[in-house]
Image (cartoon, rainbow, N blue to C red; front, side, top):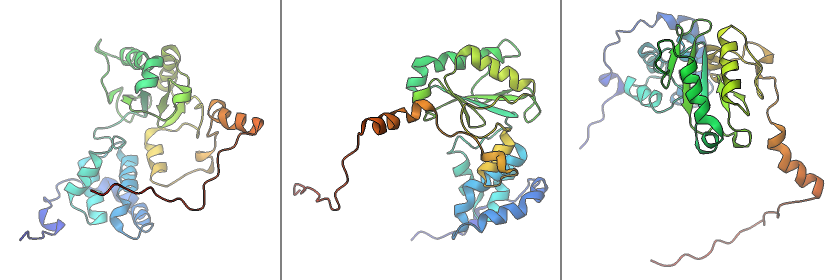
Length: 252
């Protein structure tokens, strides 16, 4: 018979300094209150701790563990599964270049290669999730290649702190990162006004400091063109029947 072991029994002693998170305890508890089961609050709480340090540190894992009464192993399993949680300090801005099939064919690979070389400080191209400048400091940039960013009609695309910059070229991408390094914040093609990585992590946790944080166009002309053509030409999809009979399955 397998013996049940409580989470508290398998946790290692806390050696991390958690005082860096003293200012977000109330917000952490507000996140927990949104859910009938406290463990469901883990994803937004990880964004919350990332908004403090710019990544999810071991201290951040222990903070979530204590707030949600989970083991450190349970929290770590989630942190290491999702790429949106960074395990080392991120730059002021996270630049994600789509290198999935369509964007890659349209120039995404060339954009990623160009940015890696352009941001290099020692002659060696910047690697995936590597940072130029001091992480978290103004002008610092972390570059990553990303899987599909769901903007194939506008490829090649990249994101800065998860905001879209569509129809990019190597040249426009270089202009964009240079502007970021100068402290400028060029407007995204779509979406909310650009902020920094820590601020967007706070927004993903569900906290918005300003009403304007979510203002901005959400769809591009290209994306809506099909719906507009259908409306102009009177095209409609067949209505769904009220009841659908499933075909009989062959007996095994």
